Structures are given as structure tokens and as C-alpha cells.
Length: 622
Image (cartoon, rainbow, N blue to C red; front, side):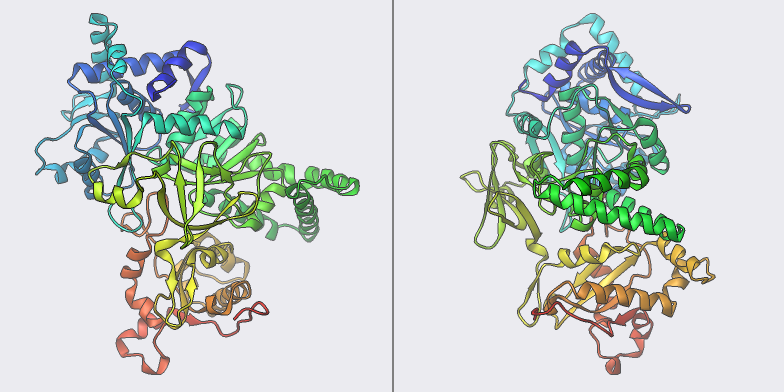
């Protein structure tokens, strides 16, 4: 197989009657076979060709992760076009930017609401894309429904049964298959062009994580617009014949997990962090005896985990204790994820070793990987038999990794993208003529070839004293505590570091209830002296784990949650550092003003800022 279009053709030939997708309808899970998926995709592709879609044209998909998204994407590829996903959480202006920049000729939209938000921003464009609305009310004039497009394709195939095969024959392996727009933490989104060959190379490289077959099952709930769900999830499972269930209501994801009981689970770190927090919260509410049993089991599990991390067999007495701990505690924790997961795959951001070790102790191995859209997702990955917690694994087969003199991670291999759409200068800056791509991340390689990511090159803070600080390390330590949901460390060209903290509303209310603080308002609770003191204690504890120049001297609690709609978070919930710093500039400035020099206009802001009164430091740090 050389092209993405080969995946479904081959799968429908080899296992036509095996389950492909599971979709919940009226409370029941309905199954589509690979043969049925292939038929529907063929009709949709034929409908697009019959309606005038030319080879190489751009097709955008705007909507939530669901069966219609997958079918629209596969039909676009079969029609010889370029598939472009758009996050459904983007504003109309942001979504229209991608439509314009990509020169999209077609638009699949989830519903009239998603379509309506972009149309006002397309009035000045030369042509408005052909529109297909998945959930189009009968009789409404906005474009076609998915069913109408499929019926048009059915009629076209009756006239010309070979039309999609001829179109597929024109596709070249080195041709662009996808343009995936990065979430843009530092500016407007950039369209990364991935070829059929890029993606197929990534799929073959992932053989190293072990066999996946039709006996496995996965779940889809992350945005298919993101490279992580698109390639290792969507295309990889077709390549391996793994059925997948769509989670259409994120409010009941844990219920779906318990019903589907997935065997392979890919996710972002926040899912594991929330699960860890949930377990600890339940333990806090448990009886003294249950707490004691849990702490004993955790201690036993972590001890066993450390032997396994060192590739050593735990001693007999520890194996026996581990079996008891599993029966009393860990088996119940695994049931949160259905109880059958062989391993998890995580990327996009680091997870603390403490959380990774906890899951490993409970019998759930989280394999962290590293990459970016520009390298077709992963370029390094931990493997079930070759992992190191805290690292992002070793280079994939046929991939080279080296560290530049300034610490930047450089990557070379067949997974490196073709370039940025409409941005040849940026492409030349990013990819050297020798094929090495500059990732923008800072990292190190250990003697065994495991890669550790230590920060983002553009995020490095240089204090007024000339100290270089990687803020992500400190932010991860802060967000390890259940009360702190997001943290932003600030201090570039400043005398010391300060932090903006967003608290977890549910955990704040739970914390208040446990202490008998009567308030329905999270905002009111955030002002309570007892909570401020608690956060001061948490920050002071983090300060003991970092060098003196990395310690947080003051912090402020954000008066409202950060929002995707305000461009403060990316659709994958990464903090847009520069945007947040601009939106809360006054609050940040107040953290560096001496109390006696504060102006009247700053007084309301400084009520939200707090010094760290007691700090201690790791001996020897300075």
C-alpha cells in the first residue's frame, strides 16, 4: 500500500464483514462493517466527482468527531482531493481564515449553526465553497445533505461504476493528502502539508508498539482535526482493522468506556490527570481504613513499578503483596477505563512521572510519545517492552534525532512534511536543505537514546538576572495538584518569577464543602483567606523542588476561566501564552509592583495577587 486510499480498499477486501465503526443510536450501539463503510465512501466520493470536484482541490470538514466526519474525510481522499479538518470550537472568523487560506472548494459542515458562523466571513471571497450539511433539515436551501450527496453518487456509479477507481489511479504517493492547520500557540494557524507517503510511513513505523487486530477496539472522542486522532487513530485503525466506537456525548464518556471496554486507548495528558485527581478525591472521602489500604497498595504498586522500570523481576514477597493490592485496589481503578486496556498512548504535553508511575503501579502502562503535525504526528515513542517513564521514547524506525548546539530537537526521516501551505519562506526556515526539521522544542537524549523534552524554545524565560528558565517544568509541578487546573509562569526580563493560576471549579467547591465553607460561588471561595493560604502552601511546596531562581515569588488567581473562544486556549486546550499575558497584562504587572508604590487604579487587581510568605529550597540550589 502506497496511498491513504489503499487503506480502506484493502481493508474492505480482507475483512469485509468485520466491525468497522460503532455508533450509539437510541441508547444502543449499532455496527457498520468494513464493506458497508467502503460502499458509503464510494458513493460519497462519486457524488463529489459528479458534482465537479477536481483532483487536488481542497475540501474542509467543520464539525465534531463522529461517523459523518470519518466518512467525509475518506470520501474526500478517494475523490483525489486534499482533506482539511477545522475544529468545531473555532470562531467563525478563525474557521473562515482556514477556508480562505486553503482555497477550499468544498465544505462539509456538521449543522446549520456551524455553517452560519462562517458564512458572514466569506462574503468577500471570490467563490463560496460547495456546501454539504450533515444534519440539514429537510427542505432547507443551504447546500446538500450527506444523504443527498450519497444518492447523487449512487446514481453516478450506476452510469459509470469505475469512476472512483480512475480518480484514485491519478493520485501520486508524493501528492498532498492532508493540510492540517496547527493550533497556533504563537500566531495564526499554519497549514502543514502531509503527503500520502508521509502518512503511510508513519503507519508502518507504528508497528513497533505491537500487534493490533480486529480483536481490539478503540474509542474516538478527541478532535479528528488534530493530527494525533487523525493519523495514529483514524487511519491507523483502518490499516490494522481495529473497530472504533464514537463518543458523541462527552458528558457520558466514562459510561461509554465501561460499555465498550477499549483495549487500546489514545488520549491527551489532561484525561490521565483528571482520572488521577478523581481517584485521589474519592480516597479523601473514604473511611480511615480504606485510606490506609489505598496508601499501602499505592506504596506496594510503586515499588513493583520501579523494579519493572529497571527491567528487573520484583522479589517474591513483593509480587505476593502486589497481587493482594491488585485485588483490593488496582482492579477497581482499571475499571474506570473499562478494565481491558493493554496500554495507553499519550502525547501533546508532558505528564508528571508521579502520575505515570501511579498508573503503571495500577497495571496500566502509559506510553508517552513526541512529535508534531510537521512530522506526521510521532517521531519518538515509548514501546511496551522498551520504555522509560518521563521520557518520550526512542526514535521511530527510519527516523533520525539529534540535538542542536542550542538544545533544539532536530528530526529527519520520511515522515517530515512537504512544507507550509502558501508559506515557502517559513518552510525554508523550518526545514534545512539536508532534510532536518527544526521542531522548536528543547530536549536531551540519554545514553540509551531516550528523548526528554525540557521546554519550548520560544517559551524560554530569561530573567533580568540572566537566568534561563523553562516555564513548562514549573507549570507541570503546579498543575499536579488537584486544585490547580492551569498555570502560567511569567518573568521574562523581570527580577523574579510569578504565576497566574486557574483553579479547578469542581475541586474548589469540594475543598470548601469539606471545610464547611458555605458558598455557591467559586469566585467568592477564591477570595477566602483559607483557600489563599492553601494555594500559598502548594506553591511553596513546588518551590522546594526547583532551583532558587526558578521559585515563584508571587501568584494571582485568574478571575475567570481561560477560553478557547477568546483564543486563550488552543482547541487542544494548550495555553496561548502570549494571548493570556496580553489579556491579563494589568494583573501580571501588579505582581511586580511594590505594595507601597501601588496606585489606586491597581488596588482591585492586587487583591487577587499574593506573595509566597514561606519558601524553602532544595539544598545546593541557588
